[in-house]
Amino acid sequence: MNELQAVLVGVTLLSAAWMVATMIRIQEFLRGRGRRVNPLLLRVMIFNYLSDYRRITMQELGRPGILYRQFEAAPC
Image (tube, rainbow, N blue to C red; front, side, top):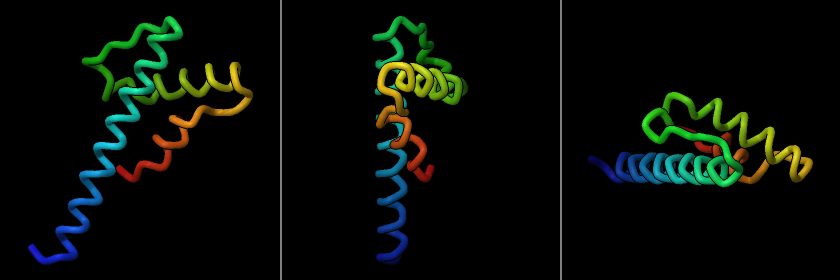
């Protein structure tokens, strides 16, 4: 593996880890607001949870929360 491939693999792994961390934080946010979240179906239901997160933060803050933008920006 040459240097460029190693850098790209590193960036990909970092991005995937960031996306997983963001998904977990969204899950915890929704649980804190009383929304039932199934951790086993997180990968399947993430877009439903993401829309719920956006709707709740729009009601509370008047804009989408920071986790919404972080999930959108993740290139994975």
